[in-house]
Image (cartoon, rainbow, N blue to C red; front, side, top):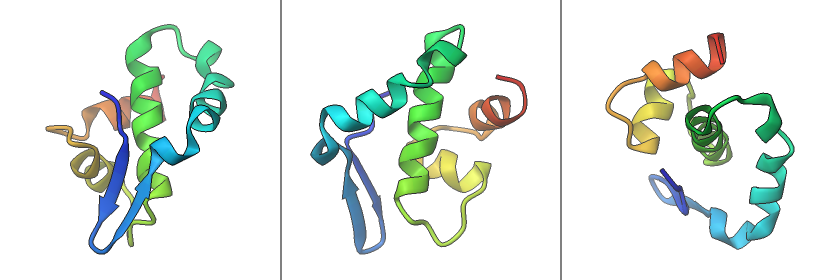
Length: 80
């Protein structure tokens, strides 16, 4: 899953505007994850945090990122 535009209400953040900067930033943490799935989930979660949602928890982050459930983010935050 690749997130390019993060939107909530009237606010939006174009992650593509960060260009290589966002990819390089996330690349700093890539070695911390043994698999690509947690890396993608981490990028999605950071994108959600950058969206300035009024309240962020695993459910709102999952809904915002287009996930069907919060399980991926709960795993990321507790076990990955």
